[in-house]
Amino acid sequence: DSSGGLRGRKGDIWEGGIRMPLLARWPGHVPRESTSDQIISQIDLLATIAATDETDLPQDAGEDSFNMLPVLLGKQGEEPVRETLLLQSTGGNNVAIRRGDWKFIPWLGSGGFLTKPSRVKPASGEPPGQLYNLREDPGEQNNLYAEHPELVEQISKMLKQQRQSKRTRPE
Image (cartoon, rainbow, N blue to C red; front, side, top):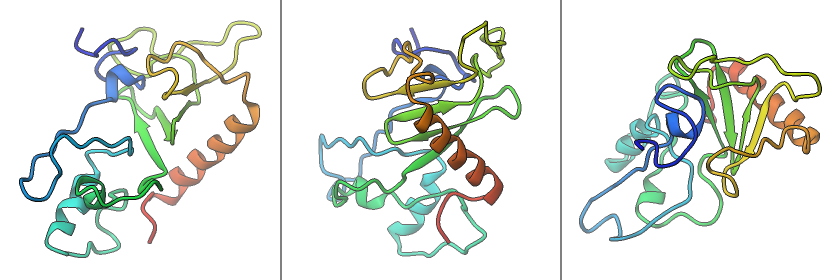
C-alpha cells in the first residue's frame, strides 16, 4: 500500500494522493529525531532555501512559498507558519484547501485521474462537498460537511479569497 493506508491514490485530492513526509538532515542545524506537525508544502522549499543565506524573495517570486527554516531548526513556537495550504488534484481545476487540521473539498469524489469517477453527483440528502478533520481522521472516512456548516462556509470563503488573490504568502 503505497499510500500508507490513507484514502486515495496519486493525483487524488485525498491524503493518499498528496500527503508525503518531509525528511530533513542538516548536521549542526536540524535537531536529530525532531518532528513537527506544521503544514509544509514542496512550494515552501523556495523561501526556506532562500532563508538559509538570508536572501529575501522579491514580491513576485514564490507567492505561495513560506519560509519554514525556523520549523526545521526547531525554533518555531506553537503558532503555525502556514495557516492554510491550497491543494490541487491532477484532474483539472479541482482545488481544495487545508486549514490547520481541517480539509475542505468543495465537491464529492477524488478529483483525480486514477480514481473514477473523479467527481460524484450528491445523492438525495447527501452534502455537496467534503470536510475532514485530518488529526482525528487522517484516512478521510468521516465526512463532517453536514455537521459543521459554519466551518464549511468560513473555509469556503478562505478558498475563494485565496484563489482570487493569486497568492497565499502575505506581501
